[in-house]
Image 1 (cartoon, rainbow over the protein chains, first blue to last red):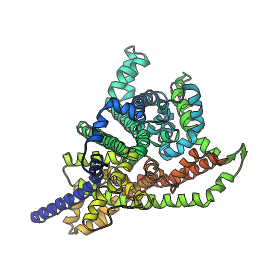
Image 2 (cartoon, each protein chain N blue to C red):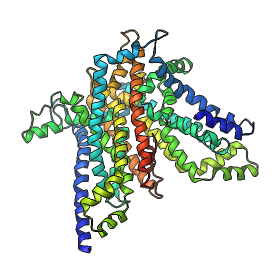
Image 3 (cartoon, one colour):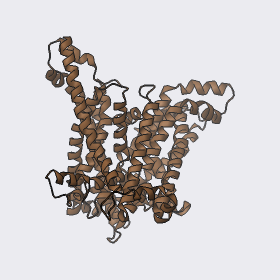
Length: 283
Length: 294
């Protein structure tokens, strides 16, 4: 029996190595291709680091590719505003519904998961008249896309925060704080929020990720965020835009890889577990 | 259903103004989610202020029908290939050490490709498979092709299909890995104790348990590909071979009058397809969670 087990394990290991290697090679080929393409000297056919030197020279980037600069700034602002609005809306509402309006919880869940059945491209169509008003009130800056992005991140953020709220006894905590004389504001800030730290972090992280990668809405509303800038620059200077794309992907990978170590303490608290659960449970 | 529940909430509440606490949230989602959804639903049946079926009829125009068919075809093919390869990868990875670096590396990479892809992925693809790029050149050196990849990379059923796999396979891994990890080793041991072979285990035990999860993940992959816009928009520069691109087209070409409302009809068509798939997915997912305790 033990011999059989050992043979089985060996076969499993071989299968794992073969499959993982083949798929990883498939995934890494484009990364290699990007490095190869950006270090090409298109004029002479040799190798050159010119593209990367240009990219690291922030002053020149700003003047030669104004789109890239403004898109980058807009994306950074969006990555701050979107999670902020999302948290300000969701955390108090979800806590409040748990404490005082439990009958509303199904409605809240339904609304928060609704964006999953509305693809971004469909949302753009419906948002057109709304954004005419947004432009009227706030002006046409790219930053105001944050209102639409909050809707896009709603399902993921809801799932993350819901898991967090499930894990703590909101009612007891709130009642304890209230009986010691705390107002609702104090309960939110000093009791609920600190207890939700992990959930808030992963919800924000998902919001940042989604915001930095968003293209559809920004492009169709003709606003320049990082992705749109990459797209626009790609039309005139392919090497620069490929280099930016490479940096964006590698940056995202490093962040996710680092996060997977942070979240591995408790099973099911990592962002991936969250993400998987979100994808799996919702419909 | 929602109304009945809300009524229930009212009855249980003292009239203390507790509802005021949820006003900001509901106001926000009304403006930025519910009204836009209604705009699409109603706008699909309205043209120049009058109720009409003209927009819906426009869905039967050859260009739109072709786009829908090609979208469905592309989504179906990429979700099938993505699901099979992704499931295999998920199984292979589930046999690795649970906290090992390999697993973290692969899941992180897949997270990036599945979520951040979009435009960056399209550029990566062009830089790798485009004319004079690394892959065609390598293939040429070993005697395949001319070194110039030609125009196939811009075709929706060739280049686009390949690049979609770069986010479909990773998504499958992320979605399906928990299901494979939920397979208990005891089930396999029990099969072996009773004299069953590996083949029998997969056919009679693991297969049926994983099947609902697999189909569910497949459907999720389908909607994912069906609603993807960024990659296709960055790669396809001529024509609008896919439904999302057709909808995007109604934004840029304001030449044809009433085109905007045809866009709403197409958006409605997309919502219907995604909605149907999501409902099937919800039903299957309920079945899938019977065996797999998460």
